[in-house]
Length: 141
Image 1 (cartoon, rainbow, N blue to C red):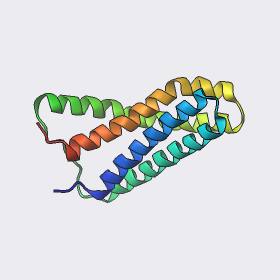
Image 2: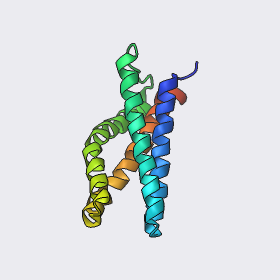
Image 3: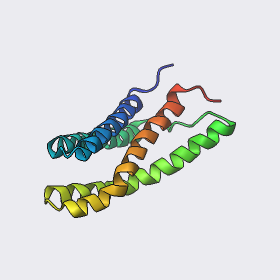
Image 4: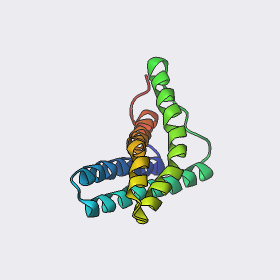
């Protein structure tokens, strides 16, 4: 059985956001502000599209996906999901604040937020893909 289309798209958007974030981090470490800005815009767009598709899927789908695994894999799944979900919600206003500071040229405030936001956003992107893989791709064990 194939996984549903929208969760697959969502996982792809999460993975894309993570890749853009990493590329943006590399760019700013290399002092390439133009490339950094482009990568961060792409990361934000990927995450925003993910959020829209995620909400649409959960508002229109019949039922929710339940993890079928048992034992250790079930514990790992719920640990990953239990950290991913609250962090995904928590970072949204901080992403908006970081973008606002950057657009205003307030780079000290932008950096202060992104020191912890950047790794957290990457974590959310990666764990979003892990949740997808555990729900739809990897055999439950």
